[in-house]
Image (tube, rainbow, N blue to C red; front, top):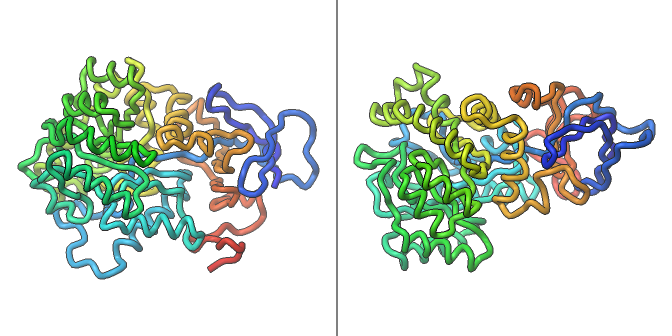
Length: 417
């Protein structure tokens, strides 16, 4: 397959250049900027073509249309959660996100979804799973009965980390601080897992050639996570100059998850149904988080895009709102936001040699849009073409002239189920 007349994005240079892409066996076989491709090439009509986007913080198994997280999946029939997660994965792919890091599923339903996507029986993004989140004994575990695995002390943390890997996890996720969407008895600015417990998780991850994602709102939890060798800090809401400078020096990625606030708060009717203590927390943290993310960015902290899809009102398929928030609220340039959701995400996943940029030999994951996102980042919201591994799952203008696969994806033999 040859795509001609495409404005091809170089994520390293932060610039587009008109050229053509040759795709073969699901990978980019050649990129050219000179000469005239053969007449039967697919004309991209000067669309802006970028690498498929990467969301490093999602929860596929959470019902985002339920405003009360304390009653998730109560009485759900067998299969309900996996089917919901499958549909969320499909919506995520169609919005242009071709790879995700699933950082807290529900009784491993998300791993079943990942395996089905990998087998080619359903359509979805490339999924990297953390399994259950390793938490200390917590008053919020009843909220997240299928998501938390309680562990107290280094030995229990090691066992819990090994359990996630044994169940098919690709990485480890820990709670180094409390959460916002939690019980009244939990504070997001309070430390949870201690340094010796965090180190235990990092040891097991390194033993198994993977990494730890650390949920850390509290400043001390951010510092603990960096010092113990976590690859990323999720949220990082209450960090200070010292904490962010440590992150920048260590190369620890920050995953800001800015989408949580508009997801819940911008729909007043929905927000009014949310438990009052959770709604008040979200509202009180909104300005603080934005200011602190601006500080982190100004201090040179590396940012990887993550939405926290799964929080109330923060729906799969709306993932690219995060790019606009990073630019308009935090002060990233469009080039920086695109880097955060492409090559930085791939690097955090340890897959920068496979995807995250449009380069020869990498997987043919790409998106296309008519407007230039460097001029206005909101152009990504109007993308009209999504390809993963050389298969077009969205082609609004029918450039390829064929129907794209629906939820039931092409199988390995090329047929449809």
